[in-house]
Length: 78
Image 1 (cartoon, rainbow, N blue to C red):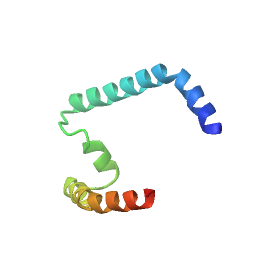
Image 2: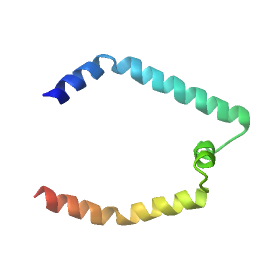
Image 3: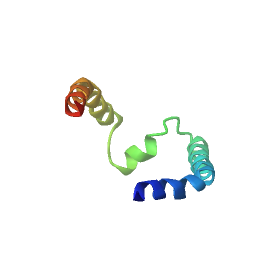
């Protein structure tokens, strides 16, 4: 019941929130362009002290395990 109320309340402002997120993203991407950064992950990687190779390795591991997760979720659902 609370979830439906929550969804309704947020749904009333969906257009405003979507516009706000788009403006924030546009500002960030414009800033990166002015800085000469081509990779939108450059700043998040710097902030988190992570290399692109590390992120790519982590993502590869996730992608490799997806079939097992899907199998688990299907079994759990049935």
